[in-house]
Image (cartoon, one colour):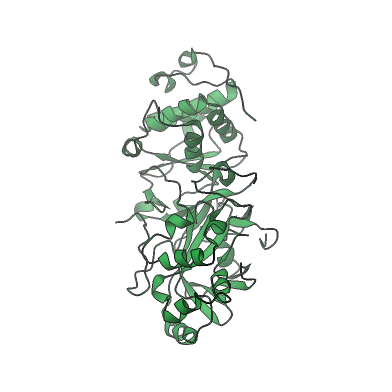
Length: 424
């Protein structure tokens, strides 16, 4: 429902003289309590030199979608982490006041992408590996040209960095926190639902599957999906999103390539690698150690967390190591593996050879010479019924950062676009 915006008092700078008086425009907000909340937030941002984001709040208040975003931020009823790019980060991205090129929908979705559900500070991220957080961006909001309605949120991968920093791992580059959460103690409790974490980059929306599969080392899967006519079916907007296990180009030997010209075997082989019913992230198999995932071919994959810290996906007699997990895309998730999920004469030999080379699951790609892909990384509840995508809830003030005891069910989808966070 569209909200009509009633211009608030232009004398707001008199009522709230601290940061609001520093802005060229007055905040537009018919709700007095929301005005007080946003002004308190803007005071904190101004005091910490984050004035571009401060002015962006004013910009959001002037549009229907932006106002609704701010209203839901205030009334979320849950802890939220706001990732606030620095002024320099906005400048480098070309996003500066008065935000003339920022459309209403894209600008609001950018804000939702930077808003994580739950508390995500350094202490809440596992000491090894990574965490998967839900943003506030509803996938169906982004370039939704269908009638599909989704309750799924775009995911974000978080890691621990040096000096207690938080790394937000993205396809196009990583963002790193420049300090710990801002001190909100002076807000008089108005901002108790927020953690504000400055970061050094503006987050980018993730790529489509077709874009991701153009990366060197992954192109054979792109060709295989085209051969069986499933390219558009996998990444189109749907209620369930998708999960795809992409085998490195280096393991597509001649025997596998010969199978691709067999019309009876090719669809089954490639169908073992994906499903459009789920977006499955690693915390869902790490916590119970295994997860059964039905895939397109009709088979069921077993994804398991191993004692050596690696993760594997098993299809019949074939066990493949997951060399990189949780690559978030604009309608699902991709995991990179070191085997083809189909029995061939070389499968048993290859598996026995690789079983003694543990690969720790992380969001950093493998550096093995023969099993690597040039994936950008920025450095150069059972969930088994009804087509559900699953990512974990954020920890709530918990001191045990390496455990995930809760999960949130997502109904996932997206077309050719970028990410979302929408706070109910």
